[in-house]
Length: 169
Ligand code: CUA
Image (cartoon, rainbow, N blue to C red; front, side, top):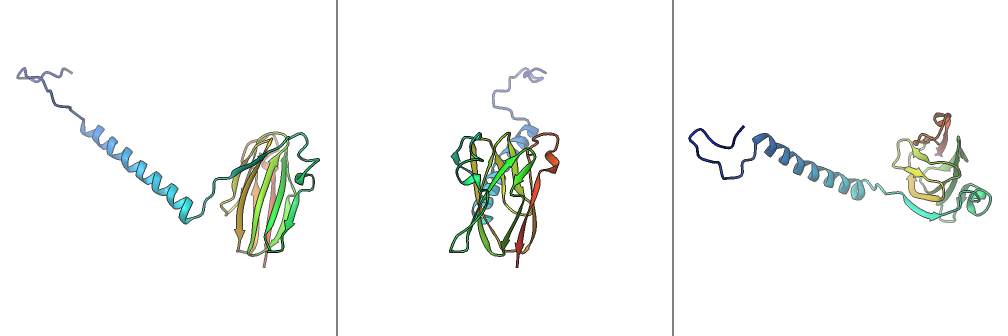
């Protein structure tokens, strides 16, 4: 369709279609919604971005250093560090028990391919990359059984890669 109107005059002002205007409004609204969601998640709900704690050699990480003896380390203040090695197709350890109210800092690494580490019904959800240690801290106030699963497809038995964190009263 031509810009020329029936009377021969040419439209010179910027014409924005009403539909396009609505899409532009929607874009601004979505940006505000996303920014608000990130702010609430970070400051009100305490979501953390899992940090790459350090780089390690995936070929030797399971035989030397803290991951050679994976599991819980308890500190005098009642907090814990938990070292977990991920590999096709298991977490070591895959059964962990802590008392309710414990603050646990997870250190998780992989020795073969990329895995995921997600504890159901919690904020703990990390990608586990060979050569890197993923770290996240969480507090477990509610007693119960928390399954943790691999969330990254890592091979034929990916669905069998899971474990349980038990929080006792
Ligand atoms: Cu490990 Cu999927």
